[in-house]
Length: 117
Image (cartoon, rainbow, N blue to C red; front, side, top):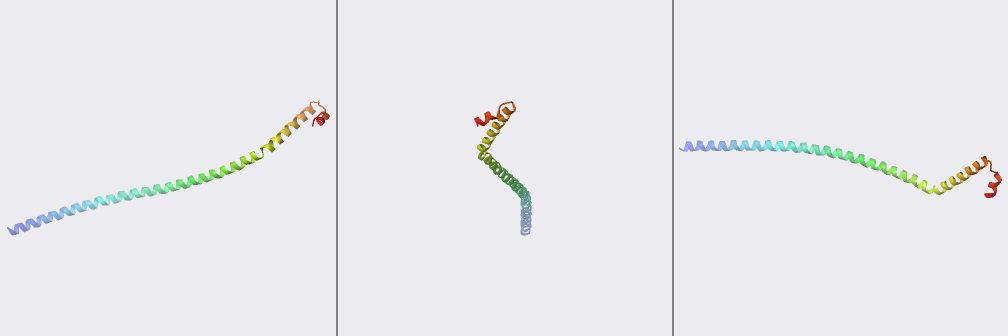
């Protein structure tokens, strides 16, 4: 009876050990799959990070170019505004001179313009 009990106890221990090994192997396999999945997720995240950084650099470069263009436009507009009155006076004088030339060519007397001027 003791021998049978010892054999049975040994069989129970063997069964418990086999169950333990089976559970452990299943756990290791699950954790290995989890590691693979997380490694893939990390690789994708790192790839997205690189793409995002490149995109950011491109946007920053474009912003810098737009800022430079804005500065150039601002200088150009400042020049136009600064010289507007001077240019307008020059245009008015040019128009008046053209009117006088037209009048002279139409037969008016030059002396009349000298007196009015």
